[in-house]
Amino acid sequence: MAASAAALVSGGSRSDPHTPAALAGMPAPFLGVAVVGSGRRTAAVDAYGDVVDLRAPGPAGRALVAVSADRQSAGTVARGEAIVARAGLGSGRALPFWRADSVRQRYVPGTNVLRTVALFGGRRAVVVRRSGGPGTAGADRRWLARARPLGAGAPRWARALYRRSLLVLRALTDRRSGAVAAGARDGWAYVWPRDAAAVAIALAAAGYQSEARQIARFLKRLDLGAAARFRGTGAPLPGRPAQGDASGWVEASARAAGLEAPQAGHACRNRADYQEGDRGDYLANAIACGARVDAFERRGGLVRAAGDPHSGFDSAAAWAVRPFPRPALFPTARRSLLALIATRGTRFGIVPSQNWQGGDDPWTAPTAWTAWALATIAGHERGSRARRAALGLIGDLRRAATPLGLLPERVSALTGLPTSTTPLAWSHAFAILALRELWPR
Image 1: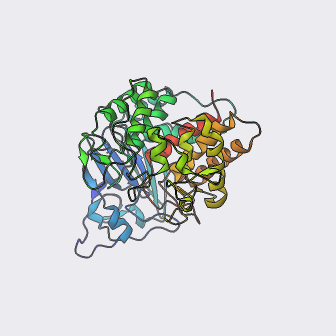
Image 2: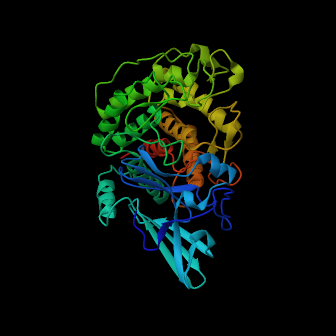
Image 3: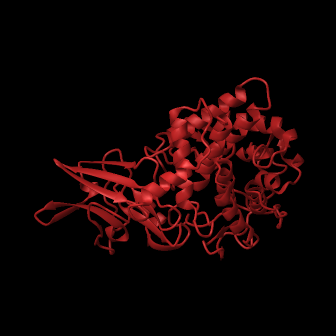
């Protein structure tokens, strides 16, 4: 990591740690809000330029620094747990950036190089975070230049979200193995088959066929029946049992990458679904596995749990449009998604399903995959309601994005501020796919 201000591992009491106070209107220190990297050494950086998670040799690799997500939530992170950006102010003083009068942060355009500027009275301190040497920015720009652009008519903000989303996927995908980390954070720096598969599909659509093939090959080697998550080595991670959609997503990623698609290898029934709760017979798994969905059809739409109308319409109905297209289900999926938007939508997006019990905070991945599906449906129907809805959801994502253009896993329904891991790989993957569907070239 490079810095033009001192970046030191600070001291601090571990007997009674307390997370330092945030500057007004900013997140607390030690909560990652940005990712830095190009597919090798990968770091999460907080709003004050501190490195709060550092992985090598890739984004799903060994943790060199890892601030606990649980301790972040509890507000008990000690200064010594991160690489802290400090400003030397003379007289032996070196203050962390959260003690500044103000802090601003931006990516160097077209790169994953992050600049944080702090003002201490009339003095200015700068820390620059990058994953390699001085050539890092040029390598990022050359990689980004390979992308298929959005079509004519795409607004400037959509193009910016598209480019930043591609750079997020570059940072979270191991350049050597194809292992895709869900996020640069303790507890998220693992490979979920559906998340990684969505990244492969998005990269293939954007013109990065070789990267998509590498991810798909990695996924095809996994023992999908062994666990829900995997290490960057491909080893299963104990603690969460296999989920019912994994084989379907791996098959979809192989097709997108132009590889021979494996057949679904393990059962999709009586498994957890993407919501990662109890075992059951769920719509998302049935769609991903190519199973019949008659038992999920209720009130003209598709509900989450088979035979249970009270489970409510599920955003996973979108998967029957893309990436597991069943044209006969397009009208039913459309009704389900529009009803979900009407009942559980916010100005920052939607929750995963109509009867979601996890509160009102919207999740960016379901918001983005629903936009992708509705944009696809709009190309198959008269009228523009589906397109208007898709554009509305993309607008919600724009509001949910951080000032750096990154998509958190979820945000506050009231403020739009991040309430979880930022950025999340598959949210950016679906954003890419939705944007390409809305403004094709």
